[in-house]
Amino acid sequence: MEDILISAGNIISDWVLLPMLTAAALWFTLRFRGVQFTMIGDMCRQLTARSNHKGISSFQAFAVSIASRVGTGNLAGVATAIIIGGPGAVFWMWVMALLGAASAFVESTLAQLYKVPDGNGGFRGGPAYYILHGLKSRPWAILFAVLISITFGLAYNSVQSNTIAEAFNSSWNIPVWLTASVISLLAGWVIWGGLKSIARFSQWVVPVMAAAYIIVALLVVVMNIERVPDVLKLIVENAFGIDEAIGGTLGGAMAMGIRRGLFSNEAGEGSAPNVAATAHVSHPVKQGLVQALGVFTDTLLICTATAFLILLSGVHTDAAVGGISLTQQALDAEFRLIPGAGAWFVSVAILFFAFTSIVANYYYGETNIRFISSSHIWVTVYRIVVTAFVLAGGLSSLGVVWSLADITMSLMAICNLCAIVPLGRYALRCLDDYRSQKRQGADPQYHRSVNKDISADTPCWPE
Image 1 (cartoon, rainbow, N blue to C red):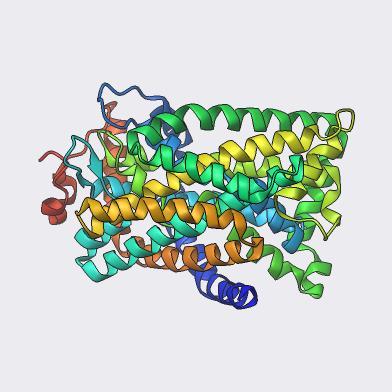
Image 2 (image 1 turned 90 degrees about the vertical axis):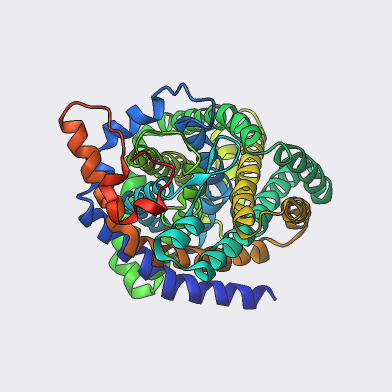
């Protein structure tokens, strides 16, 4: 079973998804004139902009999406990529983040553009909605809704709980069934509180834990500052080295870097747009910029922190260790004066990172279950199934949960990429309008006249 899943995941992701993902990221980067590089200042300003609306703020939507992004992929996924693809995989994670941020901008701008009222004074949206209203295909929209509900609520959450259980078992010998049971109960308690509960939880927990993790990583870098140039050289050489090309590991480094980078930052995958659509902003581009910043935060900061921890410690040469255990060993090697301190810190970090991912992942599934059916019964059933998969994931093998996640993620991302490429022209019009208003010194306000041909499909925006 595990071998079949791994083979299927490799074929779909390496031969279909990765070429599509790379091509789309390059196209959007060129077509949108490097929006992810030229508008970094605007990204930061929009993130901290105050909102007087009682609904979901731009920052809260950002926090929920970061809660989903920052998790197992940042700590265990990076370790797995380095073990399988070598240090060069880190370089390709960077490349994918820099280019993929353009895809993240487009999909989140489209989500804002095509959002719909949720009946409670807020909004709902995402790929299923812009596929339905933009491409006029309900079967395609339902297919995406089913795939994301399975990918995030079930497959990804299995990975998260599996990693927490492994980390706690490694640090304190706590049985995996016990950890999985407790996490399952806690997740059920939070997700039954709805989006506002998830947003409030995420906006406090995620920034604190991310800051603590980055500070520890910076401390390790400072302690080994003389070796940093060697680590950078190792990453670049392994990404382009002749020996790697001859040995066949160059392709492996690229594939693993891009695959684990996508799992971590989710750019172009179709997940972040679901929460991006809920924010109250005056222009779709504002949230598109904020979500693009999330890709940089995830990969260029937190994933890089993990990579440097592992490569500076030298433990990556031990092929017998992988996943979260490798990250724990790396930090333990740096803090030898306090035996076990590194593993304990990683265990606590992954608990918060992965748990916030679980509750944010659930929301992605719920909003798409509501798209498929308005009956609250299906939401209740979904909550029960998600809770069960959190428990099952903690008890499953690492290979099975990662392979299942790779397969469902690849299918979902392919479905989303095929939608945002033809719909990208509407996001480009929004960006041109935003830039035009900024040049005039105005705070950009979107009106449906910018995209007259789809005016009827964007009812949440003023005439």
